[in-house]
Image 1: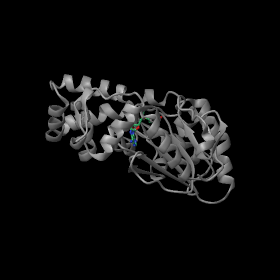
Image 2: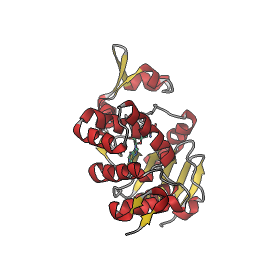
Image 3: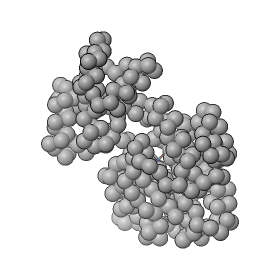
Image 4: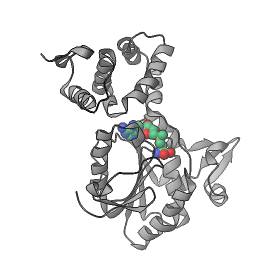
Length: 292
Ligand SMILES: C[S@@+](CC[C@H](N)C(=O)[O-])C[C@H]1O[C@@H](n2cnc3c(N)ncnc32)[C@H](O)[C@@H]1O
């Protein structure tokens, strides 16, 4: 039996995957603080298929510790039991770990590249084009893509898939009803054409809804589709460890068609994109140029 003295962690108590993640984190100097949290990570992985060890530990632990304490649990072990017994606690946990903040046209000048360059170029090919909003949260991002495509008469040539880990966020995305603040960056032309007012709220048009396929998807564990023309994956990779990001960039690259584009968030530049067969196309956009 391998015993890691400074942390009181027994190897045989952990699954090979969790033990491995633990070792990687230690090698990288990011030390897990205690066995209680480590075992919580393992149980969450077994029961929910979410590997918290692939998220930056300090941020994740801070968020979950606040929640655990607010719920009156001294340990993650008792917090986990409560999560399994009570759906409300489980949903609160999922809410806390996923962070669903999103906006339509988030960083508007980046969306101009999609609107003026990428989508027109794809439509000119005349073939079916596949767009994927990965970690789409409550839908603002895929609806932004859909508005751009609709405005350029892109349907049915354009197929949009939108995925997220959080089924609660996906339900909201499918409903497509938003408060006015979410629309602050939507150009007025698009507000008038693609939203209708429902009291104080705004509902996206059926035309947009019917052209997006919403599905549950875990970026860290799922196999991806292939021959995708545009992957929009923004403001989720910041939560992942370097190791998890590295693997994900390879997976994205393999999912793209040669010439396809990966659009990342405004704090998520890829260092040495060449190793993933990608090259910068514009700020926060990478084009696949080689198979990896
Ligand atoms: C901050 S939101 C980003 C939403 C949108 N992409 C944007 O930039 O406005 C992060 C989203 O990532 C999702 N997420 C977190 N981990 C994930 C994973 N492993 N696989 C898929 N989605 C994940 C969360 O559920 C959340 O909806």
